[in-house]
Image 1: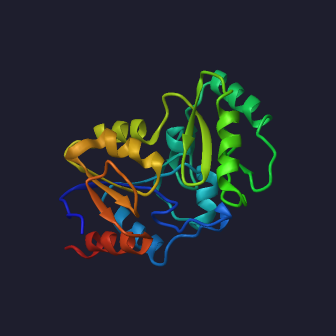
Image 2: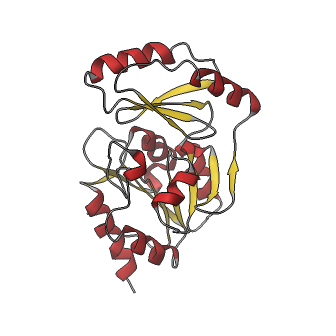
Length: 233
């Protein structure tokens, strides 16, 4: 079990950490008890949800839960269901719009539009290896203002200079005296693990190579771990 710390600053990924990974992203509802635990945590400590999703979609899935959040891998910042600031320049937006029109059409490849950006899922492809090769060739033609980020059976193009690590490091600097605590399961969370470093409690959810210092097996274990902070007097 990862340690408990005094004065934590929580950063918590959504998909694969608070909610299970499913084929339809809009059916990824929070793990049982997760919303209640998050509300109680936020009453005591600073809590941020850090996600690759558009925060508008996260508001739908979390049924009115009000928390501070980073969306689109650091390209949005604000409050779930509230005011959100988008941090993408005009040149990057134009590059993303162009690449959106050139996504390869193949069985099992599905685009998830996120308004300011988009992700390309290949979880439903019969031949995932072939689908990934198609997407690798497509992403190689992207403008220099964009970088390709691979997750679990998903590829997202994003403007350079924006990632979860940049976002959480900025927020951590604004909370001196707090120990950052980050939980995440995906490749994109590795940027945050690296940015926060050994002074933070970094927790990888699930299997796989990681820069995190600690590990939990699944979403249910995440909720159980967070409950320890709720029950602590």
